[in-house]
Image (cartoon, rainbow, N blue to C red; front, side, top):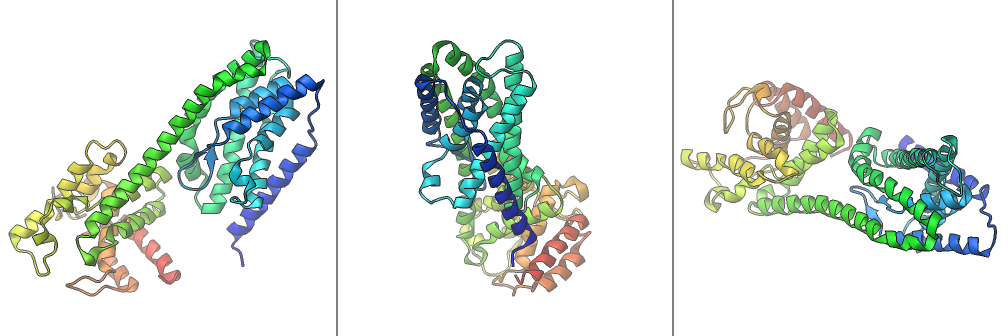
Length: 418
């Protein structure tokens, strides 16, 4: 039996697909003569070529296109029907036609694009724009208004789908997968106006001159995505390197990162903040790279001097993150993840809310994994036993508010049979 989320997702997919098909087939383009048709087909081909290498968004299989200025140009100069057909069909990609994407999602994507360009056309007309020419100043204002409507309409349709698919809030989807693209998309609007003016005065074939800035924009977006992926790969590689030094803690960093992210989500953190906590959770023990193997792999109890050396891993880890533009924001979370609510932790003896909330979350996630994992010196606790230990240590070792959230996370894990 499908969950309500699955039912609503499928219903949404079919509704958007049906509306898009209705828009497409009630807006058939017409042409004055063969030259007009040839210009349209040329524009269709330009858009299709521009869609060969789309930009993949972080998390998920969605993509960002830089072809909207070309689509807007077709709509303004050749009418809403031509724009709707180009935006819907010229943007089909090889993976759509080769079966790599399920047919229902291909139709859903076409529906989204048809609806967005339909809304562009209606907004353009409503603000006083005229198809066939772009005049100053009303035409410019109509173009910008319509472009904003198209962008927001497309973003909202995608956000609803991704929210239903992932269980993430609409706000979270917006912050993680949409918000960062808006400056780049807004920067394309003036370019779109210029493209319309050039094609209006010199013919559509001059639009090939605009492919360099469009490809540059696509290159910049790809580099941004690659940078995010590099951060994740680096964090994962470092955490694996740390865990590999001790067979008993293998996988520890990944589990701590996951628990910390679940905790942050339970405490209603924003999606981008949750993502950063997950990265930093992966690297919370990165400073152990600077600790001698004789201490790291010791089976028995530490001497005082050995324990003092082991404690330095928190400061070493923070220093390693210093200067990193993204993950470096969490250097204090690494430094203080062994501080205690009662002030008896290390390295600086902070207490209560002097400790960053993210460090308190990672501390709880770290201890919970230690409780529920077999170690050479103790057997793991059951989830029920770990809950009791968390309650016992609330207000001394852990922030009571963090423990309250962690208990809810553990209850869900028990309900899921983990």
